[in-house]
Each structure stands twice: as structure tokens, then as C-alpha cells.
Length: 445
Image (cartoon, rainbow, N blue to C red; front, side):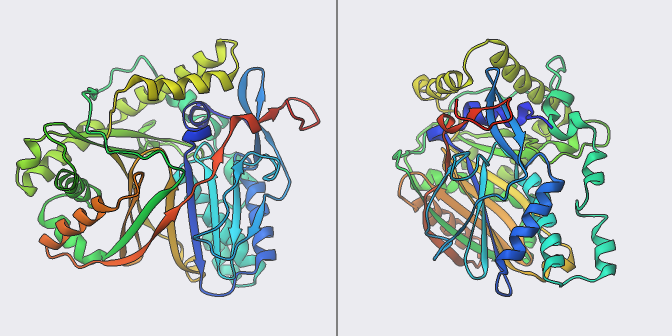
């Protein structure tokens, strides 16, 4: 087991005050049996060795050590408005994740350096598999069926080659590959950030079939159409002038590594950028959707992602070979972004796609919610059953961008309903909490 460069990068670039925190909330149809859930989580972690680890400092590198302990569970009165914690702290036993729960809800909060959405989705399925067994709600035939689609044994994950399993960027990345497309960073409109320790959010939902018809009408995709509508909303709700509106879209890279893709549960996603000039924003919706589709076609290609992975792996390798403290390097990396004064994006759209659970697991769940606490304004776009969700997380105490998006949807005669809104305080990972590894004792540096 090792910590690969795709995970290490987050410790250098997105820790401390810039911590990137991802959060799932699972709502159960029946009362949560927490003792059974704890056993299920521990069994899943015994399979997912890459998750069952404490993050440590060793030989001037970020590293990890396997832990068989039970991760931190905390009972909350309200899963939406509750305490926050420091990842990798003593309280969390060094883990970069933890669980909170109420009578029928389970929050999984984790540092992005653990995994991306794809990796967490596979883990959640395994947790629900073991939970079903613990509470006796699965029969032998369903166990056999799930064994082909859920990781439930060491043998399944151990069959993945170690380099791909733990370090996909180091294994599949290549700095020498010629990319098919290079995005030129020309600067973007800066969407104000009040630098407070919270984000305002609002989520709406649309009938999936209804929105699918609109997507088909404009020859787009769910995320492509939302990207066009959100950038139009930004121009109508803020004084963008002639500046570009640049949208970042994270993409799952697994299908683009190798001839048939790879399977890994650690971070294996990177982002593409789409620039909308002021002139482009004046074009028809059909033209803007066609432009967005062409940007996707140019950017989402194997050579581009292999080059990205190689460059990121090389950056981490250079950091580690410098002989300097990774804590000092991380401080410089994060400060350099603030000091540069350059703004390369306006906001982020993350599109996990459609959450689909096998029937034997789906019957446990009433709902799935996902949100994040990060250093940028962001939209989450995802589908669960017949509900297409759009969640906006604001960094400036204002939801006027979301209001403008709702106006855009209204112009298209799209019916929507408000799902939830509120204030989110995220969890953070402070590098000062990491301890020195490499000995039998998990000791403080």
C-alpha cells in the first residue's frame, strides 16, 4: 500500500485553509442501526486498504500507514447543521475522513486527498453491501449477484495491479506525450469571495425526463446545457464586462488511460476549462451548446489526460526530491496562488452523473445528497432516480447567481422545485496535525 501522486497533490495544493472537503449524506428508509453500520464500515475498510490509512510525514514526503482501528463516528442532532472536525487529527485517529449520523441519516465527510467521487461511490456500495448483511436484509442469491459489481473481498481489489490501484498518475501518466489540445489560460472574471469560513448553498430539482427532452432539443448533455445556462446567469447577475467567463469541469480520467481504461479507487480525475467570451455569450442557446460540445470534444481525450497525469506526477516527484519539508512546500504553493493575482476560472461545475445503486442496495436508501466545501464557487449537477439536482455553493453570502439560473430555466419553461438551502461549514485538513511515520509508534513529529 502506498500514497500515490494523484492523492499527494491535494495535500500540497488543497489543505490547510484551502482544504477541499467532499461530503455525502445517505438518508435511509428505516432507522439506522449504527452498531451494524460501524461493523459494515470496518469490513469495507478491510477490503479498501487504500482508504483505511492514516496520513503521515515520512522522509520529507506525505505517506500513509494502514490502520485497523474503527474510524470516528459522531452522533449529531441535525446532519445539516452540526460540528466540523479536523481531518487527520488525534480526534479522528489520523484518518482523513469520519462519519456523523442521526436516527436515519449518515454523513461521510472526507478530504479530497482520499479519493474522488468515483472512488467514494464504489466504497459506499461496499459499505451498504456489508450493512445489508449485518441487518439481515439480503439473501444468498442477491449476495452472488452483488459479488460481480461490488468490492466485497480482498481478492477483488488485490487483482488490480498495485501501480494502477494506488498510483494511477505515476503508472499511466507520461510527460512526453503530445496532447491533442492545450487550454490557454487567458484569465477569467473573478466571482467575488468574502473569504469567510462558510458557504451558502441552494439546491433545486427537475424531473429527469423533462430535462432530458430539453437536452435533446439543444443537442447537448445535462452538464453541457447547465454550463451554458450558468454562464449566461453569471453575466446577467454580475458586471462581467468583456471578461471571459471560464468554467472548470472535473472529468473522470479512468476510461482514458490505456486501451480499455483502468480501475482504481484513489483520485483519478482532472479538470478541463471552457471559456465563454462576451461575444460568445450573445449567441443563440443552440450555438452556445454546439460550442460547448466542441470544447468537450477537444479537451476530453486520452493524450490530454495522460499528459496531465504525467505533469502532476512530475510536480509531486520534484517536490519530494527537493529534500524540503512538504509542509513548507505546501505553504508556498498555496500562497503563490493568492499572490499571483491571476484568476483562471469563474466557478466550477462538478457532474457526478447518475447515482445508480443495485436493487438490493437501493431499497435501503431514501435519498443521496452530495455537497462540498472548497475554495471556489461551485455547482453540483447530478441525478438520483427521477430527480435531476442542481446545487450552487456560494463563496460570497449571495445566492443571486442561483436566482439568475432559475430565471434562465423559467425562460425555457422548465419546472423546478427547491430541495434545500442553508449554510455549510466544511471540515479541514491541517498539515500541522500530521505525525511522523515509519515506526511502530504513531507518534507526533
